[in-house]
Image 1 (cartoon, rainbow, N blue to C red):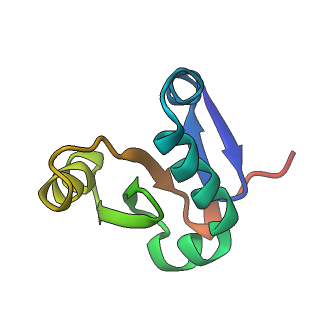
Image 2: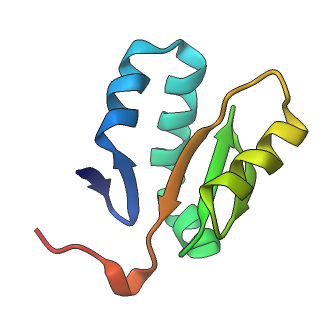
Length: 92
């Protein structure tokens, strides 16, 4: 089950984890929401890893995005999500 906002989907388990984790994760979640359109335009169809207020890694798999982020920030855990392509928009 996923929660979606625009073209960005957040797995329900990750949303629950976000509520339990520190403010750094909350900052990343808020940044992602605030930059939704530009992130969707640039990273549609890819997995991304957000640390602080930047895309620290991206790629065709969550593992690749995670690995790139950890290379840049080995002591941090990124927020991982998949950016939907526009053709997969949801109408509610």
